[in-house]
Picture 1 (cartoon, rainbow, N blue to C red):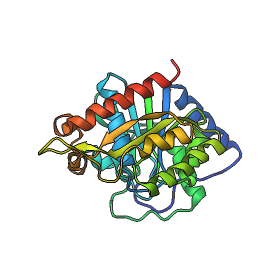
Picture 2 (cartoon, rainbow, N blue to C red; picture 1 turned 60 degrees about the vertical axis):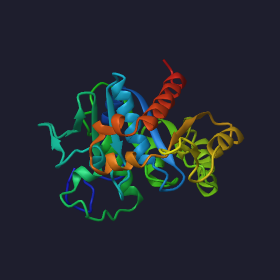
Picture 3 (cartoon, rainbow, N blue to C red; picture 1 turned 120 degrees about the horizontal axis):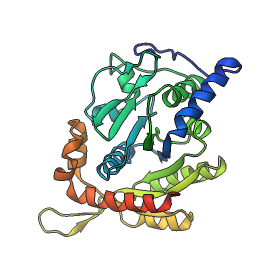
Picture 4 (cartoon, rainbow, N blue to C red; picture 1 turned 30 degrees about the horizontal axis):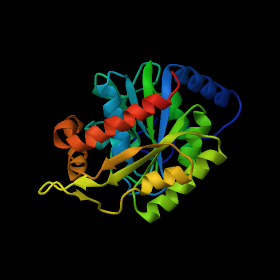
Amino acid sequence: MAPNTNKPSCGASHGPDSQDADQKITRVLADIRHKLLVMSGKGGVGKSSVSAGLALGLAAKGYQVGLLDVDIHGPSLAGMMGVQGLLDLTPDQRVIPKAVNPRLKVVSMQSLMQNRDQAVIWRGPAKSGVIRQFVGDVQWGNIDFLIIDAPPGTGDEPLSVAQTIPEARAVIVTTPQDVALADVRKSINFCRTIQLAMVGLVENMGPFACPCCGKSISLFKSGGGQTTATQMEVPFLGSLPFDPNVVKVFDLGQPQRLQESAAGFVAALDAVIERILAALPV
């Protein structure tokens, strides 16, 4: 993969090269037990924070986890997870993920660019080709979970992931307000249209306890995620409370401080993870 160019080193193709790529992807996926695609209908719902939290929480439970950022135009997970520098390659030209801790490693488009402010200007086929490389050319090894953070909406990237990893399962993130819930219904219908299995719906930025009086406060509204999940006949995985410390921890690139800084969020996230684990095949 070229770290400082606006052209990917491969794109959608056919023939021997495409067959070789398919074989590499098949081999890599065989070593990954569960693949979770974290989606949202719109931006600003904290999808990347949920992706990062899920990866950290699963790793804390002893699972080996890979975190893949396929938000090609707005990658953020490298910075959030505190990893720096360009990705290294093995002698056979496979990408080595950046280690966050002994059980968690991450690959992000951000780690392929020498200039983080560089704009990536690609059309759909180019993005699809890079996503296939992120899967087939990365040395993930034997891991229990691959958490894939997709950009918001129902465009090229989530479609490419679904086509490249047909056994992936979607975790859909929303917030309680009506505009987010309207968009998340589109994400649910997207999954059904392309036959992408859904683990369930997570409501982020939900009610939280006032630090002064302990009274429950709703920034937007409450219960919208549960209601939408019921209406759309999708499992509701739980509500995560709004906590500015979550933003602060990830902005500083200090994910190891999440537990001590946002205990309420972590406890709610742990309940979500337990429901995800219970929903996945053994």
